[in-house]
Structure formats: structure tokens, C-alpha cells
Length: 425
Ligand code: HAM
Image (cartoon, rainbow, N blue to C red; front, top):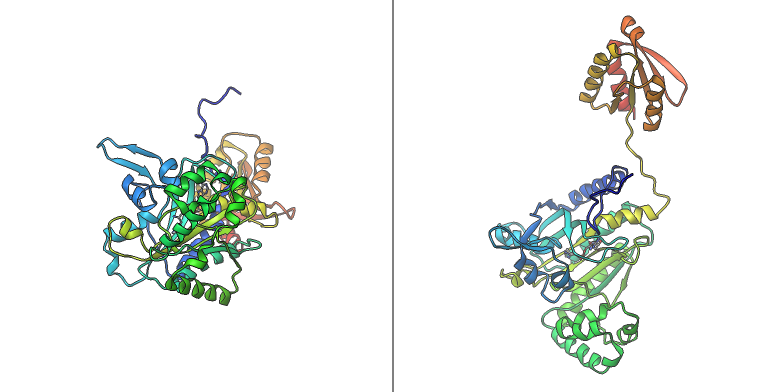
């Protein structure tokens, strides 16, 4: 075969029909769960003003510095393909006066997000997020609620060893003093740390705790933990959240190094890690962002939420060998033995489909043997062969594929027979 002229751009993924049963299962669970928790769907544009992310996600973050798909549109406006949902959700909340709705305002979204990252297993330049946000309330019970949504989704999907990584990264009251302590400590260890961390100390000091380079690990291990520097309110918030998590029996590890890659977080941050998705093991990430609204020019609006990458959920499911996904197969295959029978078969198939019976008709003019091969490959339960003889008698034989048996039906009986069989399924 000659080399294809076009393939998908680097780092993006086609989700082919054979992978759809996984997506379908996940989407089904999401719809049930958001309903139980009272979250309503919010569909947002795929692009926003670049400034929304620069101010919302933060200038010093990898996302804003290196990863955004930004371009000038024909009107000269700087536009960015969304690299995440949260800033857009807050923008929509402020724009549509949602503050007047009963609080908290609870919304979920689903769709593609774009980040120019180095592609790897589980890391794409376009991925799909299930995103959940609850706005307008500071209560740690709400942090627990959004975490429960993530937990329930993964639990129902059968994830093994499910547990949260959690941390509190403080608030504008207590974090500045902690950052001073952290910088002081790092300044005593400058010869041991990588060049990136030297830069981070100036632009985004909290993120030194997140560095993956081997040479920085020892310094990170011995860094002062933020937990010892939280103000009374942040401490109280974190311990109430842990109390709720304990009460629900959710497993968690307190991870002092968990700081997250977006600037808007305050107090709670959390992730769920899973096996089977390569080096990128976070299947979801989220937290509280009580300062985001002000960062984008709004009044104070507390909020908490998380997002989960669907591709990473699928990879986790695929890595767990014992998950059984039932693929939807058509019920019946209609083979055509003579051209004269085709109009009848086309009409009967269309009647069955109007009754929601999944069925297939043989296209083209292949031998009966080839048609039966196709029926077998498609895994149908029944086949019906129609030719001259069946037309003359106005009767067909229905062949049961697994049981080696046949029944005879008059033309009038066909629809009812398959509608009933479909209902039995
Ligand atoms: P995030 O941690 O940047 O958080 O992304 C959330 C999730 O999206 C990750 O845990 C991962 O499952 C998936 N993900 C991220 N980048 C990629 C990628 N390149 N390829 C595949 N999957 C990826 C946020 O986006 C926040 N807005 C979450 C949030 C909502 N915080 C509060 N509310």
C-alpha cells in the first residue's frame, strides 16, 4: 500500500468503533451519577478569550506558558482552544448571573480540551474531560461531595485499589508566609536542585514540590510541609474534609507534594491515581478555587470541582483484564438469495428498525455463502434467507445461529417475532 498522504496530527487519538463500548459504559455511568447528585449539564464553547486562561489558570503555569493552542482570529482577537473547563465555567457563571440561583450551583460538562504537551501513553494533545463544578459555597461537605462523584464513578467501573491523594495548599492568608519559608529552605539548597526549580522559585515556588527530576527528590523530601503552616480556617477545613472521607470509608493518602499545575487552587487539592496508564497516572484531579472569580475580575465566588480524562479511564479499564464489556450486536441478518427478493427484504428491515430491532441487510450481490460468513462475523443470533421460493410461498425460515434449529414464519409474522425476541434480550 502506498504511504498515506494524511494521518491524524501527532498526539491526537481517533476513538474507533471497537473502543466505543468503553466510552458508552463510562458515559452511561456519568449520566446516572450526576443525576443522583443533582448536577446539571453546562455546554461551553471550545474556545475563549486567551486572557481568561492567562488570568484564571495563571501566567506562571505550564499550561499558559507552553501548552495553549492560541491564535488570532480574523477580527484580530486572541483566541485559545480551551485547555481546561474550570475558568470557562466561572466565566459563564458570572456572565449569566448564576449567583442569583440557589447555592451551590452544580454543573457538569463533557468534551475535548487541548494542550500542546509532549505525547506519551495516556497523554494527548486533545483529550476528553468529564468536568464537575460546584460554585457559591465554602462548606467542606461540598469538597467531599465532588470527591464522592469521582469515587463513585471509579468504584462502579470496578477500579482496583481506589484511593485519593489529598493535600491542602492553604489560602491567601497563610500561603505567602509558607512560600517564604519554602524559598528560604530552597535557597540553602540551590546547588542540589535542577535549573527548572531555580526558575520555579521565582515564578511559581509551590511547584518545586512537584518536580520529578531525580536530583531534586532529596530536597523535596526534607522541605517544610505546608500542613504545619496552614491558618486556623484552612486547618479546620482540611480536618473536616478528612472526617467526612473517613466516615465514608474512602481511602486516601495525605501527600504534601501534591500542589497541582493550575494557579487557582486554594485549600483542598486532590487526585486519583490509577495503574495501567503509563507515567501519567492521574485519572482525575481537582480541588477548591475560592479566588478564581476575583482573578478573572468577578466578585468573590468560592468553588470546588474536578476533571477526569476519559481516555485515561479507558486505559485503566483496559489494563484490568477481568472487565467484561458486552458489545451490542445486531439481532438478525437478512440474506438475499435472489435480486427479486431484495425489495421485500429492504422493506422488512426498515419496518424492524422502526421498531428498534437491530438488524442488517446484505448489500451488493454476493454468494449466499459469503453472506452467511458475514452473518457469522457480525455475531447475530438469527439469519433469514429470502429467495424465489420464499417469495412464492410468502414464508421464510428463521435460523437460530447457536442452536442449529429453524422455525418457519409467514411474512406477516416476521415483525412480531423479532420484536418479541428483541424484548427478551
Ligand atoms: P488537570 O489535572 O489538569 O485538571 O486535568 C484533569 C484530568 O484530565 C487529569 O487528571 C487527566 O485525567 C486528564 N488529562 C489532563 N491532561 C491530559 C492529557 N494531556 N492527556 C490525557 N488526559 C489528560 C484540570 O483540568 C482542572 N480544570 C480540574 C478541576 C476542575 N479543578 C477544579 N475543577
